[in-house]
Image (cartoon, rainbow, N blue to C red; front, side, top):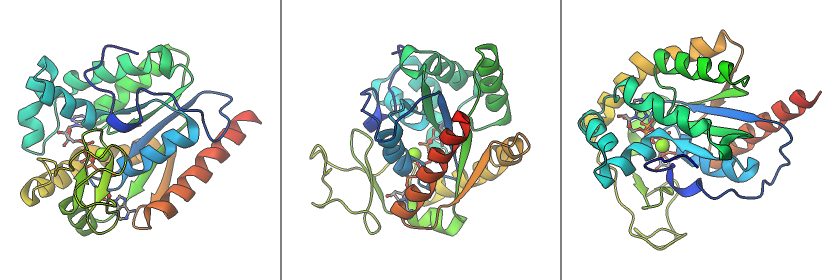
Length: 245
Ligand code: AP5
Ligand code: MG
């Protein structure tokens, strides 16, 4: 495990026994607008495939909470709904994916988020003789993003809920560890709109970037979490089979 300020909460660093046998390296990236359900699906996919999970948003929020140097560099950008500078985040992820626990694969959420980040990731993997297995795009329209993020609640460990769409069993308490649920600082309406604009401007170009490299798989994120999960899981399992042939 690298010396990370945080590993993305609920799924890492514990390696769970995969529900689906993993026989070769599975390097997955989740892409999509804020509130698309990346974190929601990641929690399920890490269980399915036993992958270490690196969510840059969670790593950065942990760093801010701990007051580390990384957190100090990230805080003002995150609060404003902008992106932290590429050179602040790239090294964190390259270190994570080079760690022993990621030797057989990884699930990235929130990285890459810009073309320079995607270039840096591609170069590092190529130098290590590795490659991306697939980029999983979970797509939802902007108005749905606003609805979802204004009702989102998260636990200290990163488990994600929604007051209407995925409520906890007891109001404002995590089902898993009973901790108090909170609203993220960047889930205010004006910050949500800024994050959406930043997504369309800086991250959406990655859709063409990965489509042209034949790595992109699209999913309709407006379905229920279970329907989205079934679809993604089946696609990733098929990738694995294709890889074996
Ligand atoms: P980050 O934490 O990555 O935020 P984000 O990309 O904006 O994505 P979210 O976590 O808000 O949404 P999600 O897709 O995970 O949705 P979720 O599953 O929670 O990044 C935060 C900040 O960190 C950035 O703004 C930036 O400043 C910085 N940062 C991070 N990475 C960076 C990078 N690489 N470079 C530079 N800066 C970086 O679901 C949302 C809600 O919807 C929940 O309430 C959930 O219960 C509900 N929901 C989920 N799925 C469904 C469904 N199918 N139907 C109904 N409701 C659903
Ligand atoms: Mg998330």
